[in-house]
Every structure is written in structure tokens, then in C-alpha cells.
Image (cartoon, rainbow, N blue to C red; front, side, top):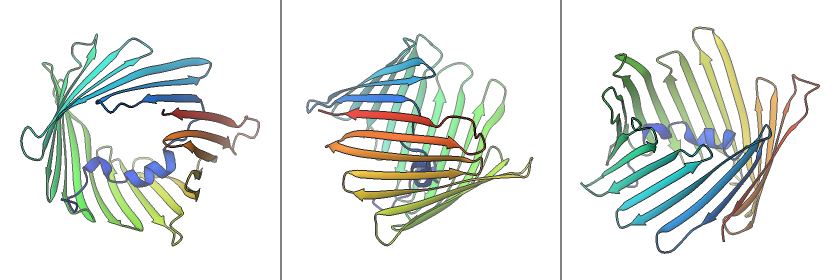
Length: 275
């Protein structure tokens, strides 16, 4: 079971997390209240461009069933019910938005020792149908995904990818946007096991343009993480994250555009609290 391939959505995910995860140039806070009874509550707020956004997320677990309810600042209610072990290796989830009665969606995940399959279909007369699959092993996997909009009878998503993973490095290549883009990523963990570097390169065939992002993550000590990032568009970013108590994090991030010399550095502060 430990050698089964990851879902197609995980191809290139390791590099993307190093280059983007936890970077935030707004003021963000998260307060979580976990519970041993299966009920958890999380409140998140974000201030950006002098406007405050926020949501409240409640998760309740009972046996093999999980109910996830999220309320955002626009009073939209997203509800997701997930059921595992209905059949061996199968997980299903139904989600819907209130008040949008056409937002219902059914997801089905199937895990096999040599394959991971995900399918999704909208619960309305003209649904969007999505299907992704990956075959292989934990080290080497090949997969693809498609999405069909039945209202217009057109494919809105067509991608294929391959991933190679080892404990100290991983590499992936994805052809996406219906063959319009080719994205390659590479992650390497240095021998010290405290520093990881990542790179991502994208080529667009129609415009013949290349773009790249490189970055690093350094574990200064068990409670301190420092990350850096540089993109070909001239933007430089850094992140400092401190775990001042178990699972409670304070994160400071900054971004500077070297091609806009008169622009101010964008700063962000994120606070995550767990009792």
C-alpha cells in the first residue's frame, strides 16, 4: 500500500509547495479549536487592499463520515460530506453551495496498488465532468486528466504528466492547458537534510515564452523555517516562520519587485493559533 502512486494532482506538488506555500503579503490569522470528540472549528481572516475577508470552517468526524461546513464573508455556505470505506479502496464526497442550488458535485476517489483514479461530476442538467488517473508506483508514476463541459460539449482541461520521486529529490513534467504549456519542476534535498531547493520552468508554445521560479527552504532549527524565492519577472520574496508553541505558527513574508524600483516592498504577517 505504501508503494501505490499518488493522485495526478500531486505531480509537481512538492516543488509548488516550496515555492508558494505560506507566502502571504496581506495580514492573515487563523485560529483553530481541535477536539477529541471529532468536532473541529477554524476561523480565518485576511486583510488585503484595506478590505477584510474571512471564513469559518467546522469539521465533524463520526466513524467513516466527515462533514465539512465553511461560511465565507459573503454568507456563502459550502458543505461537503465525505464517506470512506463504502467499498474497498473507494472514497466518495458530495459538496454543494448555499444558496447556489446548481453547485452540487459528486467526487469519487479510487485507490489501487498501482493506480489512483479521481472522478467528479456536477449534479445539474449540464454538468462538468472531470476524470484524472495516475498509474505506476510511489517512485515513478504517469497520469493525465480531462474535464468536459457538457453544456458546450468542449474539453476545458486536458493534461498529461510524469513524476519521478526519490527520498532526496523529485522531478516532474506536465503538459497542460490542452497542450499549450509544458511545465517542468525539480526538487533536491541537500545532504544536510536541513535545506531543500526547488525550480519550476514553464514554456508556452503559442508565444514561445519561458518563465521560471527558483526557491529554497531552510530549516534553521526544529521550530524555525526560512524560505526564499526568485522569479524571472524580477520579483524576490522571503519568508520567516516560527513555531512558538506546538502547531501555532507566526509567519512573516516580504516581496519586492526589482523591475519597479519606485514600488514599496509588500509585507505580510500570518498568525495561526491552536490551543
